[in-house]
Image (cartoon, rainbow, N blue to C red; front, side, top):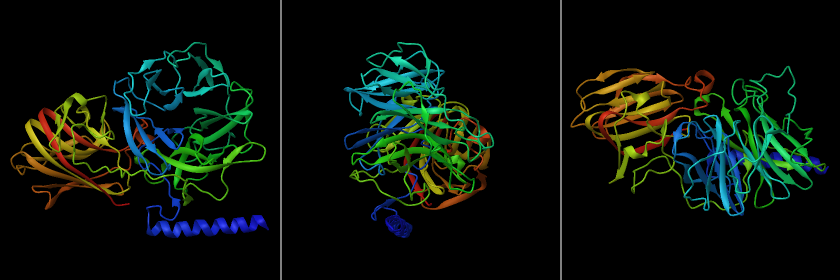
Length: 503
C-alpha cells in the first residue's frame, strides 16, 4: 500500500511540475528541466566544496580553455574564469579536483596529459605541466592513505607524486569494463571517462562505454565497486545505470558521468548527451538524481526521467544572470568568449564598449574567429561592425576551419558565405565602413540580414541549412558556434552583440 501511495504522489508531483514549467521556466515551483547547460558543454567534471559546486568541460580547440563555472544549486551557473591560456592542442575530457589546499585540473591534449593548478578557484592558474604520459580522460583519486593516482580511459592507472605534478609509477591495469551484449547497437566498446569515489567500505568507479557518438543508443553509464581502488571490480547489477534505449528519445548517447553527493546528502549524476534533432548543438550537460540500494549500489532514482521535470536540488540561487548578449563593458572579454585554433588574446582590445580584433588570415577558416556557444534551438543574433583598413568582418555559424556559413562585410560590400562558397551578394551598400549584421536561426534554417542603423533590416537572398554541421558528419567532437570574424589586413570593431533565444 505504501508503494502505491508513493507512486501516486510522485506521479502527481511530476504532473504538477510539468504543467507549471510549461507556463514558467524560472523554476519557482520546485522543478527543473534538462539540460542544465544548454549547448556544447561535453564531458562534465564536477567538484563540490561545502555549499559550492564547480564544473569544467572539454574545451577542444577553443582558447582560452577550461572555463570553470560556479553554482550553489546545481541549476543556475555563473562563469568564473578560464584555467588554460597556453595553447597545448585540442583539450579533451578534464577532471577538476582539490587536494589539500590546491585545485587541480587534469586533462589530455596533444597525445599526452597535462595538469594546471591554483590556490584559488578564481586563479591565477598555472601554465600546464606535461605529465608525459599518453591515454585520455584522466580521473584523479586518492586512497585511504592519501596516495594519489590517475585512472585513464583504458582502465589503466598510474601513481602520482604528492604534489600531483609527476607520474611516479608504471601503468597498471585496474578495470576491464562491463561486457556489452553483442547484439546492442553501439559505436564501439570505448571505455572512457573513469571517475572514482569512496562510500562506506567500497570504492566505486563510474565509466562510459559504447562510444560518445554514432547511434543514439551508443553511450552509457557503467558502474563497478571494489574494496580496493585497484580491483578486483564487481560490476553493478544495474548496468548500464543510464542509457538511451531508443532513437525516439529526446536525449541521445547519454554518458560520461560524475557521481556526487550534494551538501544536503542527496546524490546526483551529471552527464552529457546529444539532443534529438539538434546534434549540431554538441553534447549538452544533463543532471539526474541517483539513489542507493540497501545492498550498496547506486541507480537512477525511481520516477525520474532525463527528459521530464525533476525536483530541484536544495541550494541558493546565485545573484547572477548569465547572458550571451554583451555590450563589451570593461577592458577584458568575458570568460565565455574564446577563439578557435589557439589563444588570440593579443589580437584583442576591449574599450569604450567595443571589442576590436586585428585581422588575420584570408577567409573565415583561417581567421580564428571569436566564438560563443548558443543555447537555443532557434535564436537571433545581431552585431554592429566598424571596418578599418582592408579588413573583412563577419557574423557566422562556425563548426571548424573547413565548415561554416554566415554573412560578412568589407568596407563597401555585403558578402554571403555558404559552406566556404563566398561571394558578394549586395554590392556597394556599406556606408562609411559601418554596418549591422544579423543571423536568424530557425530550427537550423538560417536567414541573413544587414542594416544601416540597427533598426531597419534587409534580408539578403542567401540562406543556409546547418543541421549537418555535427560530429557524426564532420567528426571533431565539435558543435556549431556563433563566430565574430576579423579577416585580412586591418581591424574590425564589434559593438552591441545581442543574442535573443526563441526556443
